[in-house]
Image 1 (cartoon, rainbow, N blue to C red):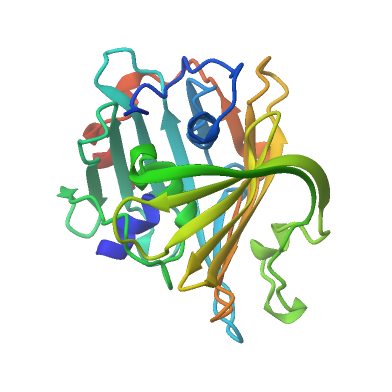
Image 2 (cartoon, rainbow, N blue to C red; image 1 turned 90 degrees about the vertical axis):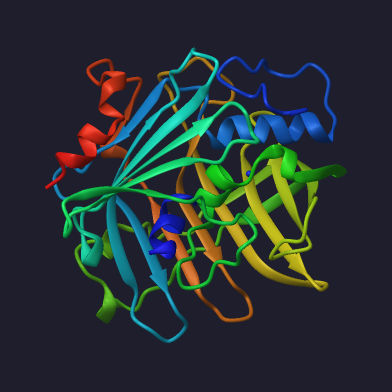
Length: 306
């Protein structure tokens, strides 16, 4: 059960980071971290709906070295539009395939970083909603590797100490999951096949956990203009234990420099070769939708899942 919750949970001094964070005029390590947090949480949006459409959906693909890929199809409903001074966001995940089909998870995040996430899970076999404890942010991710939700939900800004190591121009050849033709299905065929390349000026930001974690520190390569993180390297005992690549797209409908979202998120453990891909097809993305009321993000919606 814990790994299911971990699947949902995929980076105050800092407690004021919300939809009203201004674009920075002065730069230091803490300011860069706040801007990255803003972009990762998509606070430039009131809400975002990633609803399945014509067999297209958000895909989570996991692949162990030498094994066939495992595919999960999900829907995501994110709401950042809260002005009560208490709630920061609510996030609803619905599983569309596999043994979790019909399961829903609703996570409520608070402005007060000392408060744990409020997590409610709909279990279709029991026809009940259960309250779940927040998973430890310092656990390692292996078979349930969806660390993109760890950085978006579990890891608070105040959990790390930040250092600006360098500012430089870098080239990125983004990693992609390579699936043999014989193992492709109607869903994995949707994954982009052409490798992308990008050159950009980046901040090299080091983040060191305040407490013991599954890694000693990580290095983020952050775009100097819109604060998207192209690559993250996690180090433990002097070795790289995880690499994450993110491919970003601009949300053209918004007049905001930082309005970028990733549509292809790739993670690999160099030691084991275990890979995870999270892919968002363009046609399912809906931003700032007006016909979803705040009451949608509730236990009542969970109970209606089929």
